[in-house]
Structure formats: structure tokens, C-alpha cells
Length: 143
Image (cartoon, one colour):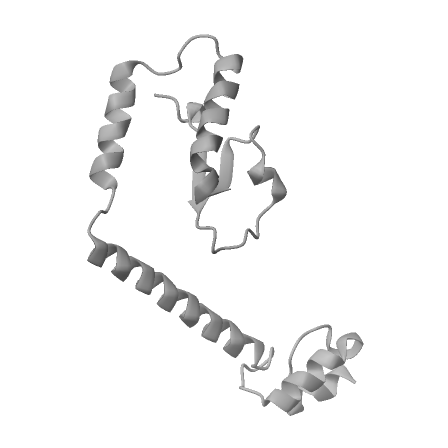
């Protein structure tokens, strides 16, 4: 089976806000991101577009049943496992933001952690430091 015949769709809860390229919201795309309340409608619209583009069915009934079976086996229905997955994602996000903050608060040359005041000073002098952060000792060569 050829992977190019698949349409990738992501459905997001209405409590979320899209922060993606607007092209991923257009029915012409083969990578779609939609709200959960729009999912059924987008699937119907996409099927109609594909029927117009391809006069004969792209998959045999056996292929469709095989895809369904694979998805059914891969789907996690246990609520506890799903909740654990969500918690792991939340922890991963918070760990990454802490790492990112630490990287932004260290000297570009020596890696020494700098105070918020030093960080602020470097970032407010963009012409001198080019958006980088330097400890007091390494600020001198940039004068």
C-alpha cells in the first residue's frame, strides 16, 4: 500500500487554540488540523474531494478492514494509561521550559549562570551583545 494515498488528520479539543500554519486548515491539504467538533464534517468533505479527484476507489475493502484492525489494536482505551500519557507530556513540557530558561540565563562563552539583572542588561543592549547573554567577565571583550 502506498503511503501517499493517506490523509493525515489531527483533531484538537475546542478548549485549545490553533497555533499552526493556516494552510493546515484547508481541505486541499493532505495534512489537516481541525477542531474535534469539525472532524466528522472535514472527513466527509475530504472524502468528497478525493472522490472527485479519483474516480475509482483507492483502497479495496480488505485494505480498509486491515487499516481499521491496525488502528483498533493501537488505540489505547484504558483511561489510566491515557492519563499517564498526558501527565508524561505535561512533565516533559515543563522540564523543557526549565532547561530553555536555564540556557537563556547562562553566559554564552563559559556557561556560568548569570543573574536576572545581568541577563536583562545583555538583552537590552542588542547592538552590543547581539541578543546573547554574557557574564560580567565576558561582557568586556564586547565593548
